[in-house]
Image (cartoon, rainbow, N blue to C red):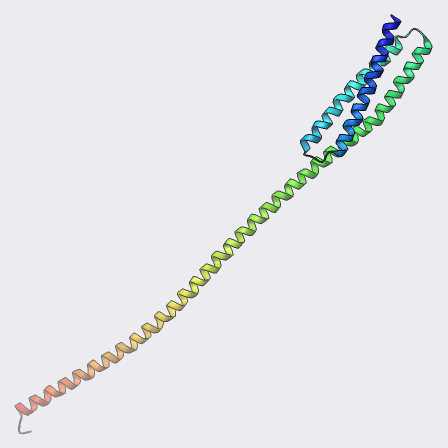
Length: 194
């Protein structure tokens, strides 16, 4: 029975060391991670899983220590459990920092997305303003062109009005001359003695 307990204790210790190294490696990966948020979240999840496994193995080691027959072995194993628990506390702080880092990164990425959307909206608004300005300039040019046409039309109408007045005056004078000529001819034929 004692041999089986020793084997179990050794296996627990080996697994604790293995999980400890894996957690350290994952924490380093989190520090080095500059990729997308999904990669950081995945690493964070792996760290949590390894911590759970590490806690479980430390609890098994503690249970094995309590089941030891010799008090000296029991104290040695309990001391190891205490050391592992202290190391876990330090690593939990690192995990907490990693989670905080992950949250900050997520927040910064959200801010970055919002800023990107704002920049895009500003660009769209700027493009709309440019298009509106072009439309206004085109309309202004068209109005200037129409204004020139209207001015030319006004001059032509004024000229035609003067021409009409002149034509009426000439027609009136021509009619008066014609009537005077007819009267003169009638006077000479009808009243030759006058």
